[in-house]
Length: 147
Image (cartoon, rainbow, N blue to C red; front, side):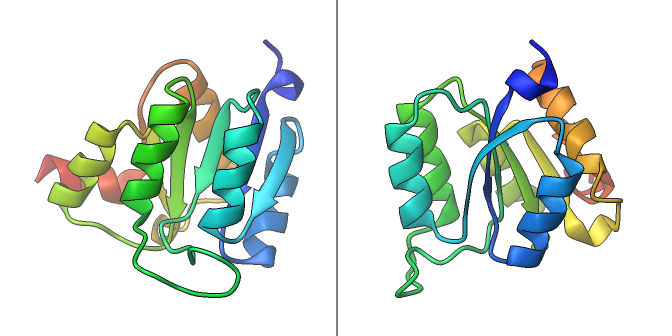
């Protein structure tokens, strides 16, 4: 499968980040971008041909409110509905070893920490890696897991 046949959805809290990701991932087919979990969940539930979701861990539940519907619950629900979906977390939230292991046990395919200050093009490399059934971890989460 060529990259332009890979369908991606972007779930990020900022238009700036969404636009940066769209530019970095221009060789892929970006089928949607969302800034809240509710809209993303509806889209993921009704679109069967999505290969990768790139998500932030700091998204509001809906455009109207911020609640405690956790990103871990969203990931778990999404993967139950779509076990073939590859989830790459791209977030500015650093986590402890326990939480990183929990996210990996839920089934995420990778974690790229924005605080690693890698070029946004690294996301395309991470997507390629997870599409080949490999786990992708940027340096900070990798180091946290090795502690």
